[in-house]
Image 1: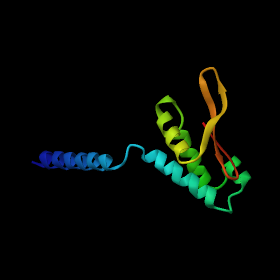
Image 2: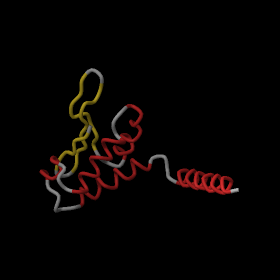
Image 3: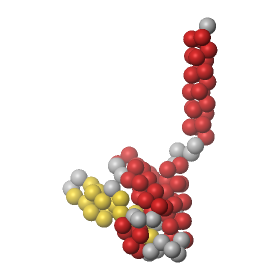
Image 4: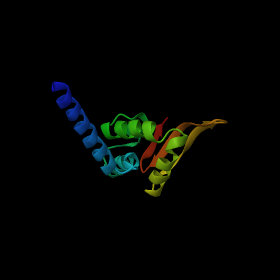
Length: 114
């Protein structure tokens, strides 16, 4: 009897998780990165050095998300979405295999990732 209750609880938990995941848009990561980049551009306190060295909290978050969701061939759609939002995303350094370091051009500096 206890096993059935535990199993039902697990199944309901999985169902809720799946429902939640279906509510999150597939391009959610690109939306979050774009939002952070816009906040960084609007914040007059954040200067070029803070962006380049990633010393500000917002910049650290954006850099982490860019590392996770803008690197690799499977994430090129995210790069396109960030570009469509008005940010220049480019290969700052590359070799014959592809991008080694990416860059996102902001108003007061370049955010490097990868």
